[in-house]
Image (tube, rainbow, N blue to C red; front, side, top):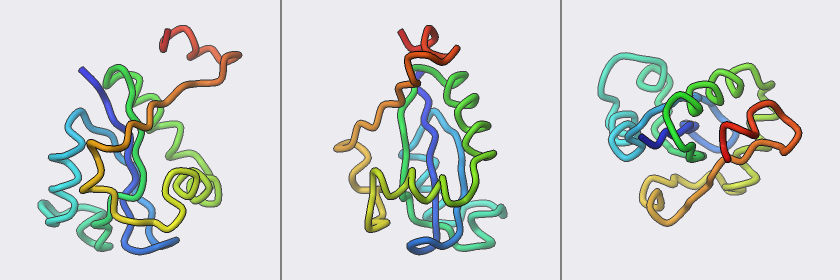
Length: 113
């Protein structure tokens, strides 16, 4: 089952929330419609500003944990590398295929080949 790591925000360079899911459409819809009482509802982080695809949910969870440790500036550079103007990518989920590929010299490389 494919996994996705994604970032939600309230505005350009605003709140940053990193999450993981196997159903990006459904999960992003829940955030957009503030289903539940969590961080994204509290801070109105309803914009899907970045995401990447992984071959399975286990690898996506590993990557999510890594991204949560990133400095804010690193996360901003990651977002702006894919989405420089911080547009809501919800309607473009099926048009964008941002596949994560680890560096060839990392221990994770063999998990993706």
